[in-house]
Amino acid sequence: GALFGSGGGVVAALVSSLVSASLRDENALITLSHMSRTVDSATLDPKGISAILQGFAVLNYRAPGVVERMSTLLARVPTGSVSPQSASNIAWSCAVHEVMDPCLLAWVWRCLDQHIGSMPVSGLSQVHQFLLYCRLQGITKADILSTYYNQDLSGELLSQVSDREVAVERRCRDSFVLSASSEKRGGSSL
Image 1 (cartoon, one colour):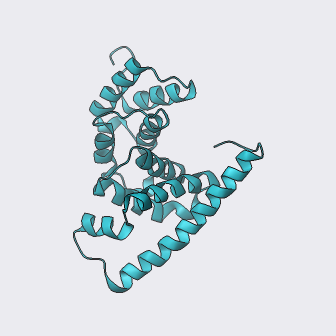
Image 2: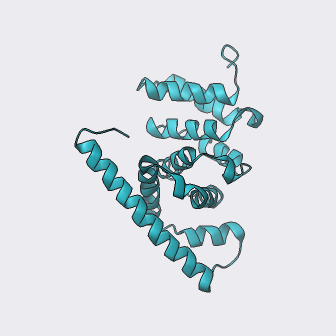
């Protein structure tokens, strides 16, 4: 780390560079996972956290401790300070990394609640994959938020959560299908 510096922005840029180059170099990934676990939180913004999580997910590299460290950092980040693109990248990365941490999942859902309305089709497609992962794992938003806030979500509040989730899930699924159709016709790639 001394040669390049070890700030969060540098780590995020290096992980993103590996993705851009389609380079899955084991030694580089080991070094970057160590740097990600030990990065000074003051040097890493939400976009950098998103880049690290997404980079390791794209490269399908399961780095012990990295997701946990990024989760700890995200827990301190107000959801309003995250861009819609970073929110969708983090959600998708959680699915790829098979995250089960209620704290991180609660943060993701709160973030998605705030940003879902302003996400582009590609972001909604990523969120669809996150929601599909949750469904396959039997993870519900109500269960996660109940666990995170240590209170029972019942009655009308649970009904409101469920109704909203159905609408969000439908919108995300439709965007996923639209993205896939566009890609199949030779349109833009995700």
